[in-house]
Structures are given as C-alpha cells and as structure tokens.
Length: 258
Image (cartoon, rainbow, N blue to C red; front, side, top):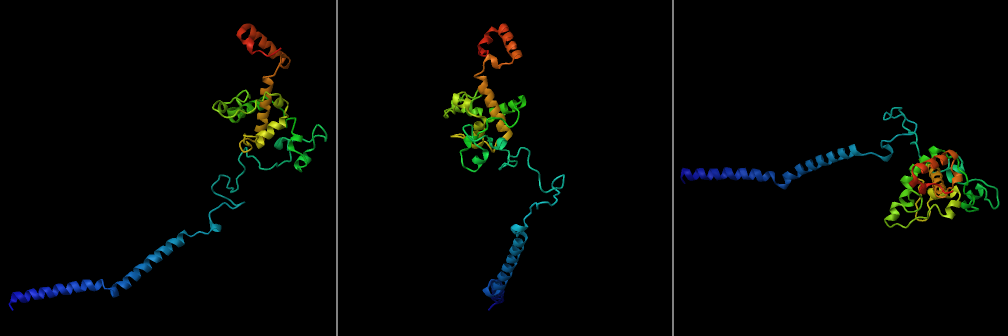
C-alpha cells in the first residue's frame, strides 16, 4: 500500500468520526433531555404570562360607592344624575304631572286616582282635564320645538295627520282637528305620548314629563288655531289684523272667521 493510499484511508476515517459525532448529537438518548428542558422552560413562561393576566371578577377595577376617585374634579366616585333624566317610577306621588291622571269625585265625571292605581277601573276614567302648571308663551314655544322634532314627521306641522312620512306611504294618524280629539281631555294626549297608541310607540324614554305636557299644550294651540273665531282673538291683535287686511288685501283670506 502506497503512502497515498494510506493518506486516503486516514482521511476517510477522520470523516467517519466527524459524521459519527454529529449523528450522536441527534440520537434519541441525547435529544430527550434537551427537549424536556425546553418544554419545561416553555411551560414556565406560559404559566408566568397566565399569572400576570389572571384577574377575578371581584377584583376588577371599578368605582366603589362613596369612595373617592381621582378621575373627577370633585374627587367623588358617585356621579349625580344627568340633567333631564327620566325617572322610571313616580318619585313624588304627583299623578297629574307624571301620569296625566287627576283625582275627581266618583260618578259620571270620573273616579279617584286610587281606584285607577289599584286596577279597579280603567285609567281613561280619570284622565286629567287640566295642566299641572300654567301654560305660558315659553311652554308653547318649547312644545312647538319638541312637536316639530318628534311629532310632525307623522302628524304634520298643522296636526292634520299629513306629515312627511305619511306622504311617503305610511298610514296616516288621525287629525287633531276631528271632533273626537278636540273633545278629548289633555290627559289623553299625555297618556298617548307616554304609553303609545296603536302604531305609535311610547316616547317616555325620549321626552321628559314637562316636555310631554308642553307638546300637549301646543296640540291644544293647533286645535284652537283651526277652529278659532274673531271672539277668541284679543282686541289689540284683532285690530292689527284688520289694519293688515287694509294694507294687504290678499291677506284677507288668512283672517280669522267672524
């Protein structure tokens, strides 16, 4: 064997030893402890992450009643009610203001509110015939604004039941100017706004009691506007109308009925 052949054999032996060492690293007996250590490390990291995110419901961040809170300027955690909040129940016992009912003597004129509240008679029997506060120009202005927003889409600006939605195909509501609704007590309109009627939904969640009464007052004003006579107009206003007719003859068709 020549020296060259001997060198080739030695080189092959060295290469075999190197391959054997590399394969020994991949042997199952060698890999098992490494995989185990890696698995333990991963599980430990997952456990730490879960422990950091764990939070019981009773320990969640919340405002405890009567405790201070740095979030608000007054340092109070409990906040006052938002202005205009609508109470779910009658807080004062004022059935006229909150329910549109009033106590009247037993008989043809009506029944006591207690009988209605106890369910012995229908609520319609004690519907209010008066307003819970004076009807002023400010009340009518507020009622007109709320009416135009919530009521006119169906009932129309004149209350004739020809609102824009009706013009688009919706079934028209009754006109306020029918004899039945002109004779209806104010409590009827308040009850309808509060509880809904027929296809009309309740507006109790959208309108505070004072605004509902303001709308009722404006409905009464609409009814009067379509059935007024000259005797219903104050003397100074009637004189101004007469002067306007003299200046603008075409306006005579808009004058009140004699």
